[in-house]
Image (cartoon, rainbow, N blue to C red; front, side, top):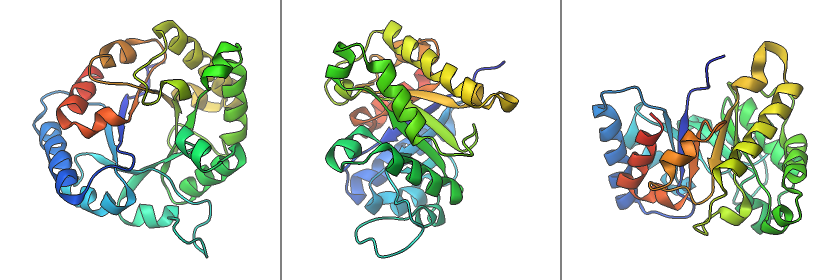
Length: 253
């Protein structure tokens, strides 16, 4: 069957003020608008404070995503953001279960699953992150760990239209290290097999997009997107440079 449409998502993390966010988003909007080839789906995930600014800047040329959402649709949750709020301001995607939130905020698989369910209720695509630590990989437990995260984080009703999986080995995020292409291919093939076994109807498991993330940059993007089983990239720090991020988009064409 045809490969899923590629997707390049930029996770700006806790970076950016309105002026530089507008400049960055406008540059990417203009590049995408002037492109004379079919592009992958492009998603920008700025901090909550910049979502409206970026939405107004990119229009319909690019897609808007958020970096997290709460599991509840509303309520007494000071400092949190509900998925319907994100949808109302133009978000189409939301990242859930990023390793930085799992580590810094103690998020576990059931909580990630609840957030993905909230995203689905609001009509958002959940980008569900999974990945092993350095010690887990050294111990040969990387496949087992990711399998557990998948089993615990995927809600009922998952399909290719409402879910993307991002494999982000924890030890590669922000370190400048990336796994060997063979290691990435092994993990993506393993995740694909588990998804296919769990979602055999209408080949849903075959059509869910699998992204790679973890020190992806404009230099290694061509090799990463050429790796078997990789349908795109979830980009961290490199997405803060519009020129570098655009090169990564072009690598996925």
